[in-house]
Image (cartoon, rainbow, N blue to C red; front, side):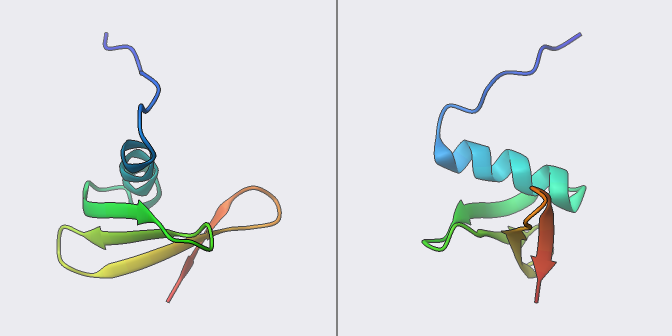
Length: 61
């Protein structure tokens, strides 16, 4: 069994979180200055996720 390792960079952390939120592997992901997560899916669609008050994530158009 593979053991989960901690992300080493902010970019790696963004990619791992994006994959978990989308349920698929993203093409690219990164943190925006406002703390939201910007993602480009493998299909080319753009996604933005923002942190909710309860600690979860919400997708924004």
